[in-house]
Length: 123
Image (cartoon, rainbow, N blue to C red; front, top):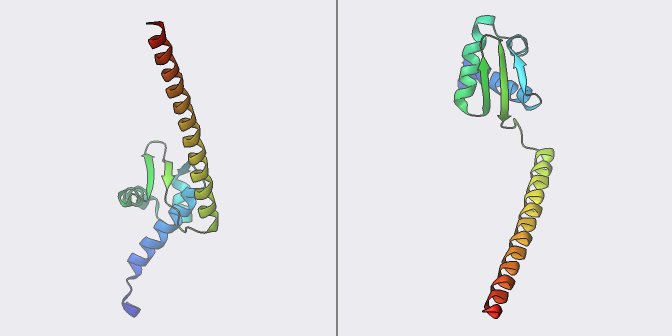
């Protein structure tokens, strides 16, 4: 316990961070890969995956029969320039989509006004 650090807790955190990094680039991972990359025993893999899922840092589904993990999303281990740029691009796309929706709604409102005015004139 040098410097007040717990070796087992440190290993657990490093394995979690490593798993998150591995999960960033794939949608499925087999137990064998997890076992090798994280230096776990075969009988530790399922418990490790359950612990990962409890953190909610990774959204995934475990298939014990197929010995695979299906990953739907993960938090980034680090949030650097590439992630900021990706976030910026996503936000700009959202803004563009919202502008398109607003333009479409304005067109509908104007068309309804014209129809109402035309109906009033006919009466």
